[in-house]
Each structure stands twice: as structure tokens, then as C-alpha cells.
Image (cartoon, rainbow over all chains, first blue to last red; front, side):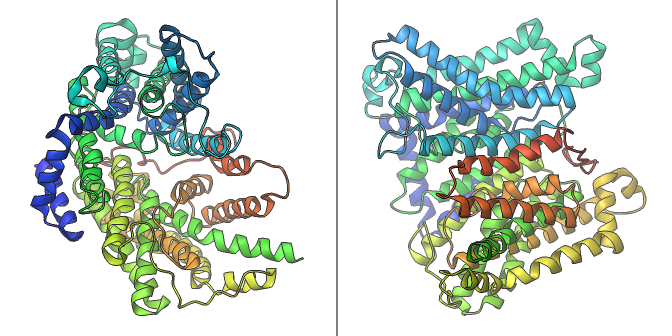
Length: 329
Length: 298
């Protein structure tokens, strides 16, 4: 039903843009799933979405609505790029990658944690605080990338050290050669499952899910609600920040204005379409990745934005179908 | 003196988009529907105003079309949120994505460029070299004069009309409103349509002043407007005052640029930081409509 609606919107918008819908759809499918390179690009587009989707889901399962994955992801990109460039040039990857990952988590975790702390301490609704934090981070990064952190004429930060770069999967798997797909996809999937295991198999995770049931239940069980909310939002932000593993260490090698923009918002849709469970979210991320890359494939026939229209429709479908007032815990 | 006049002109130019968007936000949020879609309303409004003014050679017709487009956008959003019961915030984010891409697709179709429309020639630019000239230029914008009308009109609506009272009732206590025979979906739809129409005028102010439509030209103003809504405690007059204050901040940033070594980021960050403090109850309590943030089921 939802899929049919999305397909209909896609058809109408392609037609509106003055092209034959069937031809465009065939091209999108062939370009994304029909070749090793296309699949690689699609999975590369999906990688950061798995991180932000998992981030949103993590908070959602504690009944917190983190719409700040956008800003947390940008903060992670900032932290990762700054530390990655500050490391000594000869840093081996065993040190460089974990340190950069920590910096990314620190960046995202601080922003998410602030929202969590405000919620736990003052009862500030996280939707409002994360929205404002998105604005703050966006202003801060725009200024830093355009000013203090820029290198010469280029409006981006210094390159991260060679040891911190993610291995491209195209080197090992010839089918993916040339695509942006890198090892961070494996890490993203691992994080999605690890977050799920933490929530379902550990004491701390069960406390968060009790919070997801209701605040009253949680406090009746002896769980300190405020600290739990702080923890949930900090971890959520840290996971969103990890999207930098793909964006900075995998694709660009540096941070720049606009890198990661939109990834957090689509992560909302990924979490909802995937019902906040890892398998569902990975599949949802691949779907949204295909829409994003598919737009580029058919750009010569219709504007890439046509597929974004379909993406918006998929998000509405997700919001309508998935987020009925039932618990996600 | 010249600098002062130029500053005032700048305030009068940058405020209307924020002000209308904030007023639109007040109307829809008072009905208990979180409205992240303001950014999309601004884009849609700007697009319609510019394209229709180009096509009809009449700014007045462009503005009328903007109101119609606003109503259409409000209906679409209401269809998602009220009809399909989509979670309002996610639907709002989706709506922003939709408008950002739809306007680009239509630009491409109409003008064979996905980044900008042709420039409007209908309004002649007074050559904003002197303070007086830019002031005249700012005052020539019809949307500027509509702004106080909208503020006073909406204030009156919330105070003295059945619709206004119903909107507030639905946002504050949906159950009670329902037991008095008020239809939640109907009132929410009306509020969303009206809110989108008002917010779309902000887009028109933006597009008509810049004399063309540029892709993504809303540039985060919808979120700034949302800050004004919260800072203004969901009241039309206060939200409008905050919109003026945020507009003055933007104008200040423009006139200080290159003069005083204040990083413009500091000024840009202020509205968000201020709102964060206010919603955290550190700067006077901001009390939101009770049904806001809930699933909207009442």
C-alpha cells in the first residue's frame, strides 16, 4: 500500500518532469541494483543512513524523539575531521581509525547528550532542543569550514592522515571497483546490531526500554529517569556522529560545508520504515540509498530531485504507517 | 545617518519572511500540530510568487496565487497529518524535502535550470546605493504592509472569533473540545491551511524582494521562524516581535560584516541559543500548547 503510493508519486513526478516514467524507472533500477558499481554506490549512499537510522531508533526505543541526528552527524564529521588531521602523519591505522571514531562519537555524543541532559534535568522537550541544536551546529560548522579551519583557497578542512582512511571495498571485491563503498558499511551494520543487542540483552539497555514503555513504569522499577534519558541521547548522538566514518574517513578525507547535510533527517525515515530494528533499518537504508543514487543515474533524463520527491513520499508513508502511538521499545 | 537608514531598510527587508513564517507557525501549532514544515511553506510561497508574477506581469496576481499555493500546501500537509495521521514532525521534515525537490523539478521544467528562475522585471530596483534609496526599495514591497495586518488580524482571530477559540481549544485540550462537539480533524485542517497561507506570504516576501526564485532560497529561515514561535510563546504579537528582533539581528550581522571583527557566526547562533535557554525554562517559562508533541490523537 505504502510502496504503491510511493511508486505512484514517483510516476507522477517523472511525468511532470517531462519524461517517460517506465523508461526512467528501468534506468533507476538498472543503475542502482543492476551493476556491481551501481550497487556499490547505492550501498555507499546507504552507509551513513544506517548510522543515523540506528541513532534515531536507539533514542526512539527509550521514547525519545531525536530529530537532532542531523546536527549530531555534522558534529561527528567535525570532530572526526579535526582529530584525523591533527594526528601525526605516520599514525598506523590501528590507532588512527579508533581515535577518529572516538572523536566522531564525542562530537555527536556531546550534542545529543546536551539535549538528553536538558530533558532529564529540566524536562525540555527533546524535539525542540534538538531542532535548535541542529541550527547551532549548522551555524558553527559553516563558520569553521569557511574560516578558521579552511586550507587556502579550498573551503574544506585539512586532509586526515593516510592511516585513518577507510579501505575501499572496491579494492578487494572487483565488482565494486570505482564505487565509494568502503569498510564503514560493515561497521555500520555491526553498530546497528550491537545497539539492538545492547538494548535487548543488557541491564542498561533494558532500563532504556523500560523508559520506552512509559516514564512511570521506569521509575516504578527504580530506574532514575533523568540519567537514563541523558544516556539514551548521548549514545544516540554518538552513533549519529559515527556517520563520519563513511563521510570523512571513507569518501572525502576531509570535512567541508554541506558534508552530511540531510543524512540525519533521512535517518528519521530509515528508523521508522525499519521499525527501529536492525534488519529492517539496513533494508530501509538501502532503499533510501537507492533513491539517492538513482537520482544521479537518471540526472540526464530528469532532474535528480524527482527521486527526492519519491523519498519525501516514502517518509510520509513511514510517518503515517509506522509511528502510530504504539511503543517502539 | 546613511548607515542607520540602510540598517532600518535591511531590517524591513529581512523581517517579513521570518514574520509571516512565524505567524503561520503560531496558527498551526496553536491547533496542537508541530509544524517543522515552515521551511517548505517558504519555498513553495517564494516559488509561486515569483513564477506567477513572471507569468502574469503582476505582483498582485502573484500574491493571490501565493495564497492559493499556501492553501494547497496546507491541505497536503493536513492530508498527511490529519488524514493519514502521520507523525507531524516526520511529515514536516518530509514536506520540506518535498518542497525543496519539487521546486527544483518545476524550475527545470519551466526554465530549464534547476537552480534559479529568470529575474523579475516588474519591480524596478531603486538602486540600493544610498540609505534612502534602499529604504524606499524596502517600503515598496507590498508584503511589508501586509505584515502588520496579519499580526493584528490573527490576534483578533484568536481573541474574538469562533475559529480562533476553537483552534486554541483543540490545541490545549482536544478531549474537552471534542466533547463540546468540535471536530478535531476539521479545526486542525482549517488551522493548517490558514497557517500555510500565512507562511507562504513569507516566501513571497523573500522571492519578490530578491526578484527571482533560487533553489533552497529559504536557507533555514523556517527554523529561525520556529524559534520566534517558541520565543513568542505561541502568541501572534509576541512571535511577530521576536521575528522583528531576529530580523534586526540578521540586519546587524549584514551591516557589521567586515566592519567590526565579530564573527557573524556568533550573531547567527544567538536565536538558537536563546530559544534553547527559553525552552529549558532558564529565561522565562515557555508553555507550549498542551497537545503539541503528542501524536495528535488527543
